[in-house]
Amino acid sequence: MVMSMLAPDTIAAISTAPGEAGIAVIRLSGPDAFAIADRVVASKTKPSDAPPRTMLYGHVKNPLEPGDAAVDEVILLLFRAPHSYTCEDVVEIQGHGGRVAAHRILRAVLACGARSAEPGEFTRRAFLNGRIDLLQAEAVADLIGAQSERAAAVAIDQLGGSLSSSIQALYDCLINLSADIEATMDFVDDELPPTTIGGLIARLQTARGQVTSLVQTWHEGHLLREGARVVIAGEPNVGKSTLMNRLLERDRSIVTDIPGTTRDTIEEQLILAEIPIRLIDTAGLRDADCRVEREGIRRAEDAIRTADVFIYMVDAAGGLTTEDAARLAAADPSRCLVIVNKCDLGTRISESAIDGGLKVVRASLLRDPDVTAIKTALIGVLGVREGVPPHAVISERHFAVLTGALAELDQAEGALCDPGNDGALLAAEHLRAVLESLGEITGREYSTELLDAIFSRFCIGK
Ligand SMILES: Nc1nc2c(ncn2[C@@H]2O[C@H](COP(=O)(O)OP(=O)(O)OP(=O)(O)O)[C@@H](O)[C@H]2O)c(=O)[nH]1
Ligand SMILES: [Mg+2]
Image (tube, rainbow, N blue to C red):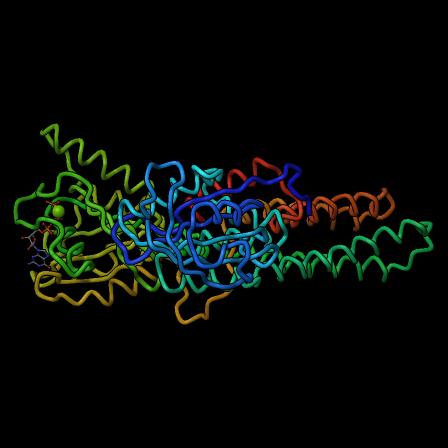
């Protein structure tokens, strides 16, 4: 672990969300946290004289403002290094919430020598001071940003170290393997029993299997963290907006019998099977004369291109148009769900009319508001496994590092299979690269740029 070389200063921020609320928390961390609290808080016991991990009642004053009027009535929570969130001296000031009160307290502590914290700076200090690793720091941001119960459960599991221990176990196993591979270099080639090389290759393959299993969790991790963009598309008047409203269980999109009713894209949030979904209703696809409608259709086509999944709706009674057939022929079954709507009016679309690879659901959305079958089909196309307990899932960053590690493991195996050609030496080099990659994931190895990229997505005050 590389420690920060600069002596840290004392940082402060409002840690609670802005707006009206019962209380707000202003957090101070750093060597002067107690000295600053002594200056701004009038209380029976001076904060610096109070025992750590205690609460103190008092009034905040701003020594730089004229008069002796109290800024707020507060409770202080006192933590002495290293027993705090950041491992530094920490004072948390609980004042009244609202748009003004917390800012007045923050102004007072800044006037007494604290610096405004950068986004994620408290958690960055917790990492730099060795209290948590980088995976746990990322889990803090995931927990704050979680939009579903499952996303929160996965984040808290990662904060508890589940993913860290999987990576650590892999690291330990590869360190041992690397040492054993290096030990074979002391043998002359024909002295080395073939079973030894076979055993090393088998261990390498086991490690590869573990990395592959982690890489396979990316899809679920992506859905839980970033959510899925689901676009409802199709020709005008097929019932796209009706479906949008049925899924949301409210009247969000305008529905009329005039083709071309929806002009712009309409986006709403929906949680489905614990996955945050960005649901997007779009303008009906057709050759339009009107400039406004043409722009809406361009937006619809853009939305389809960038969707994780698009629901393509067709009119059962109207039958498939040539354009419908062409769009469905080009659709990828892993990101398209077909709804044959208006079945109550009869159907001119036979079972075999739509390519067997595409998932198709028949519906009569006007008469039947039950969209359970559509939801189940959508969950299937999204690739969500329901009923599986929350478990460690990797993020975009881990995915990039681990796919690089997989390539190195393959090369290590290739080199081991060719022991005559400095194979052991080459394999050991590839394993070193894998170990470095794993270090980048946990933060054993890091650069300032990497930390900047990770912590900039945090909110201020965390
Ligand atoms: N009979 C019948 N009518 C339906 C059904 N679903 C929707 N409709 C009607 O079809 C018409 C068009 O519905 P919308 O949901 O506005 O269709 P849309 O695809 O959003 O249309 P645009 O916005 O014009 O592209 C409305 O009159 C709906 O009430 C259905 O299952 N059966
Ligand atoms: Mg519409």
